Image (cartoon, rainbow, N blue to C red; front, side, top):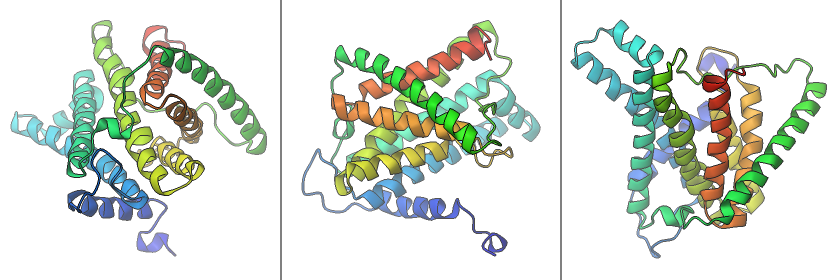
Length: 278
């Protein structure tokens, strides 16, 4: 019945995103600077608003500029979906908008990136990155093995749609920036930085970690792509998020989690575009 009136599992997320838009532009009185001056509910809503908003605005801006530049609708769509340069511009625009919107909100609440964990990096963070990756990888393999026994129909061979198919050697630098540099840095600021910090302020750490990891996993299911939900990617990123949160707590900053996220994406980049392992 709910499906007949247009309500599905994504509806609560859209409602929260709308709430986030309202709270984003509201400027309550800030009593303490350089601290988390927003509630857990605001945190979730604003995270979703920035996530959806940056993608929508980025897509519209690039699409409109393409039409103004003389491209037809078909050429515009093809450039965004099948051209390495178009996909790079799209990734860059979305990540830049995400960072701009996050910085705008932090400024409104008299906070900054250091408030949400972007402190000073330390040499020991490198060690945490390597240990964290080993723990994540082993845990993922164990969980996947258990789930395959419990859910025989689980398709572990589903491929994530990362784009950049047909990238040539001279374009790999753009692909590297699009996959290994920009998303890990911005996603860690948003998820283990802004989202986790806001949730942790009003909730027990475990609940803050669970909610952060659930939202991070949901974002990687590739809902709306027209393909079956990418459950393996959701499970993968859910587990990864817990390890990233542990690194955030252990080191006191986001740098180790950023490093681990970049390492994971770098391995995927190398296997897909350099060594063609998969």
